[in-house]
Image 1 (cartoon, rainbow, N blue to C red):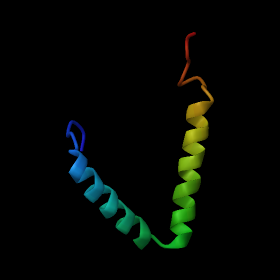
Image 2: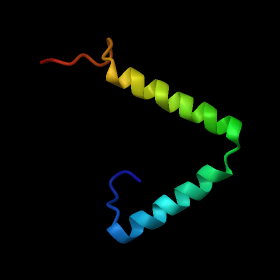
Image 3: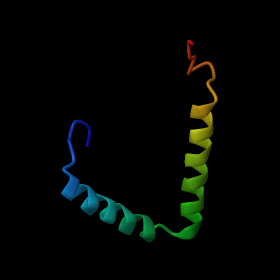
Length: 55
């Protein structure tokens, strides 16, 4: 996907395809994935040694 530009018309198709594949994931795995994403987002918002921000 890197380097490819999505046309506005294709974006809707891609989102629909992603939604279908997301719905195929069983609820237990879905909770794990959402928890991992939430944890990742928290780590990104709190700069640690890897993400030193200079102001």
